[in-house]
Length: 357
Image 1: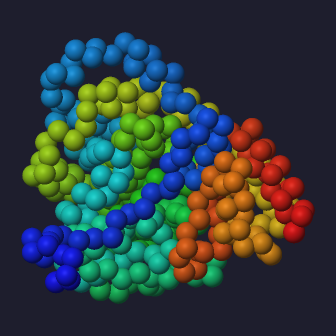
Image 2 (image 1 turned 120 degrees about the vertical axis):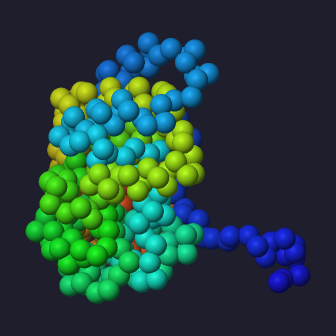
Image 3 (image 1 turned 135 degrees about the horizontal axis):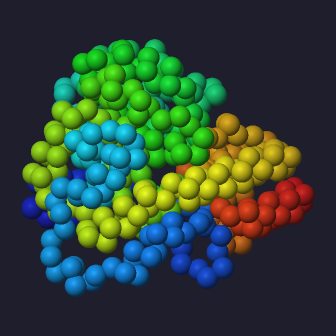
């Protein structure tokens, strides 16, 4: 025990926390660092918010979150018993780690991936092993055919934006019949193909999605997963052993309205995809290289100018993108796709800045 450490501290569960993207509060900033949707939620969400009965807030919400579970089950054509809802996909994933990864064998996930995975593994004392992505930032399926206590990977991946075809996803699931395989699909609505059809084929598959990106509701914190009835029952058993009332009344009511408006959902994702494809061309013309993103962001490196230098230059202009000082990705920037107007400002600045190099 160190000199400065109090005696009671020896029994504290110490961990290195996840570090989220910077959350500045500036009037004219362009915030492209945390993959939020640049467009508002569906009109029905606003209408429901205006009509909300705040008097009901004195009452506990439905612990089974029935209205939202039913709306999601209807939308994705599954049984309500196959749906689990949590406070953002982070809550769903954290509960899944706690529920399903309970082996002496290490869980497997990519070396370049969502940086919360190793945080949860360390917090819950879950052994883990990272599997290197190849030179094109793709998963090597063979790496996931070794003894393990579970498998998790995002598809499309974060922060690279690379989408793995369902054939490879299924190959990994088939090779792990004795483990739970979690496919984290936070960005699947921007051009990927969901693994949800495989849920009926494999009872050890859990597919996780979120309202934070494509449904414009990061501030409300809604995530969900779909899997076999058995997997969902185990998740609920753990959830109800921690907190019976995880979802608040406004989140449930507004979440249902977001699911109902499919036309708006597809319009927004379509706009983001169109902007992304346009910006890819403009970044390439400026000397950037990047994987073919199927997400609402681009993972870009410049051929001659270091990423950290560009990151700091953008930040001075109140244009925020994401940079990590980590192996393999320290010379890359993750750039969220904003509105066309926001991306025009970004490209305009980069043109002037890079021209002076």
